[in-house]
Length: 192
Image 1: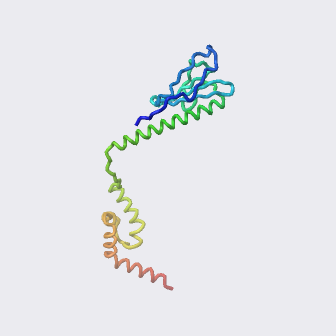
Image 2: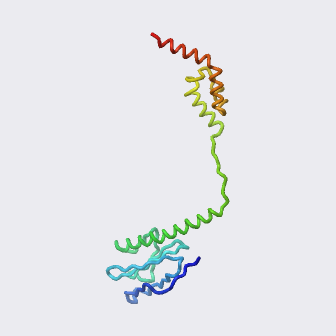
């Protein structure tokens, strides 16, 4: 839906300088593709900033440097323009507002574009068989030899990892007698 404006002049600035400073630019603030701002310092020096949303470029006109010699504004700074502290602060604020609007427009465009794309299926990432076998080998080193299957080979343990619960149950049953003998030996050595 297009915005409807009641186009009445709400601010008007006149040129404070003579013809030697050139002809000031005429800025049309009804162009929604541009952000514009005006500043006048304590010496009545005048500054006009315009940011173009389509080209992502800023331009600064300074009355003291000649209206017909605008400065490009990059990252909120007008190189070699000789701005004072107040003017730099104003320009930085203008840049912040202009690029915030620009970023919001870009975000909305990206959001709309993303919604128009078909949903991608969720991809799951699982380790390769070699990686899983290596992890099971580490588990074997830490668990199998010392706990429930003292004589189980690493190969037997790793090759059966796909069904770990069934594997541990099978190994416990297979090595139950050896495990009980080991526990009995442990208990006897602890007796005084």
